[in-house]
Image 1: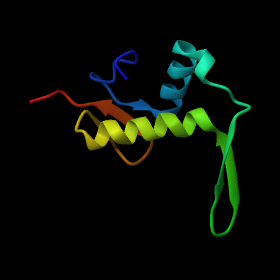
Image 2 (image 1 turned 180 degrees about the vertical axis):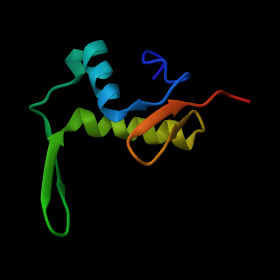
Image 3 (image 1 turned 180 degrees about the horizontal axis):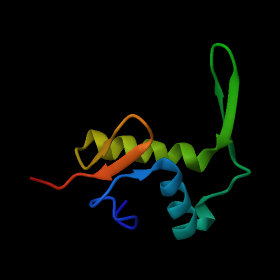
Image 4 (image 1 turned 120 degrees about the vertical axis):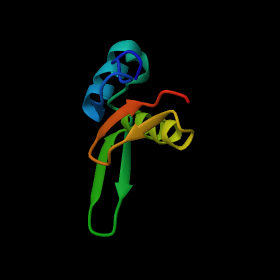
Length: 79
């Protein structure tokens, strides 16, 4: 998030994915797929994207980031 200057503005999850892929491309294996099995349908996506979202949630829970619920994130300045 610092790389994207998310302390100055909110950034989209898609922008975060692009930055992660640029910074650590060896950790972004699109062939390693995670499959969600929902009640009505099954969805799949690269596992590293799920890991990025999990990291964002951890930052949110620790008070270091905020999500707007619409896929945009920003860093929170410590008080």
